[in-house]
Image 1: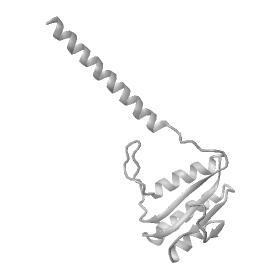
Image 2 (image 1 turned 180 degrees about the vertical axis):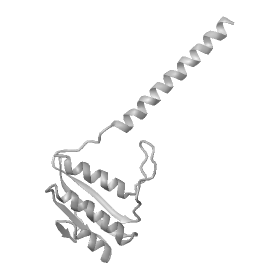
Image 3 (image 1 turned 90 degrees about the horizontal axis):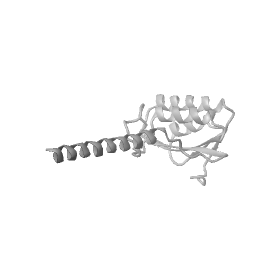
Image 4 (image 1 turned 60 degrees about the vertical axis):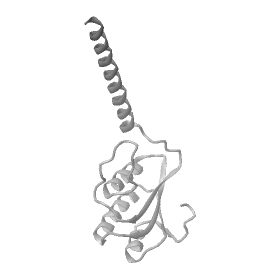
Length: 146
């Protein structure tokens, strides 16, 4: 009986220690800031469908799709971050309506109020893509930065 209780106690301690380590790992994943070098530019690639909100993601897993919510968050932080010197915007065919394009344009206009430049590169597209690029300070047909 004594040996069985000791094994049960040891198993409980191992489980609690494992849960503690897992909790610490998850905490670090959510609170870890990415490294941003001095004089960096925020690179935004816009193309395809753009959702309103980001899908739920687990730490370390990225869906790759950019949402309006992601754009707002990243542009707000970049406008306040002294290490970010501007935005490089790569625009290709957008599978969205003009309302979302206008909303993205308003976010870019708000970022431009921080006196940081926005350079747009048009890879492919039509009227919507050129309209979105018109919110930038400079529009370039070259894609050398991407």
